[in-house]
Length: 142
View 1 (cartoon, helix red, strand yellow):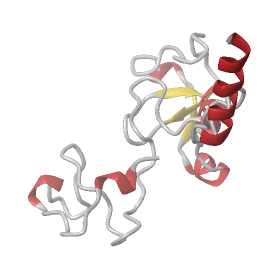
View 2: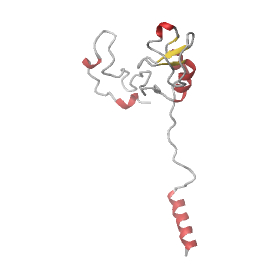
View 3: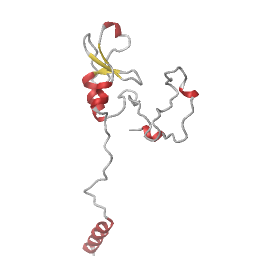
View 4: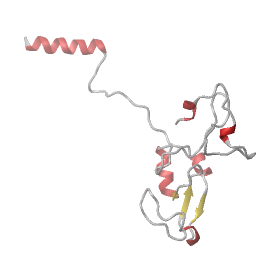
């Protein structure tokens, strides 16, 4: 009786296409492209910048004069160039605040996303503009 139950269970699983050896595949978390990484601003650390940047949140080492620091434009967080480039090679957000460091255009309309914290080049606040009718928030997520 036990062997019949095992055989039946195996047959049902095979018919249903369920195989416990193959876990469901999840989409890979893709990082930023190398061209985008190279476009992010970087500078050489000086003692004048010690008030704003004191340590790299990735490796937890204090910055020393002469270190190359990359600053993420959306949030302003700074990291060692090697640390943040490695991070952004496999992730698409800031390791400190999870904000997306590069704003991409909408795939549908080509517009930049409207956010309450950014301002337009002409000086208008983003909140004073209205989003296009075909504006899709999910189009901006990585």
